[in-house]
Length: 180
Image (cartoon, rainbow, N blue to C red; front, side, top):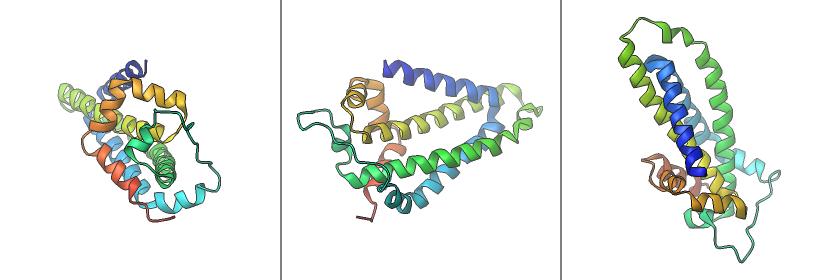
């Protein structure tokens, strides 16, 4: 079921990118990059703050479905990941609002065919990056039901472990947090 949902999300991202076109999709990719960079720069201090508000969930001792522990292994990573995703989402929403000011770019008389298809490819890339970040966040939440869903989806597993650059960078970034 999760695999079907992920494929649907990628198809929607492709379609949105096609509709936006290459030029407008470049604006949205820039917003995605800005959100990633801002989250990367500020997740550690924010992680220290949120550990006072968000409890660390524990899987039952008999649970064998610990994608988090396989991939990361510590409570610190949980808070680093939550902080990163919160900052990422807030900045991405702000970037989307700013990006919507540039909707007129989509109507510029550029080569329509290439504009749409290149936009679709960039839309797919944007969707894949966002899904990768959300799957990494989901892996941090130690709830049996959620862990079972993640473990049973081959597409989620593939995105989690094999998305070029992003998956490895997220794991490295969240593991390197320096606060205790």
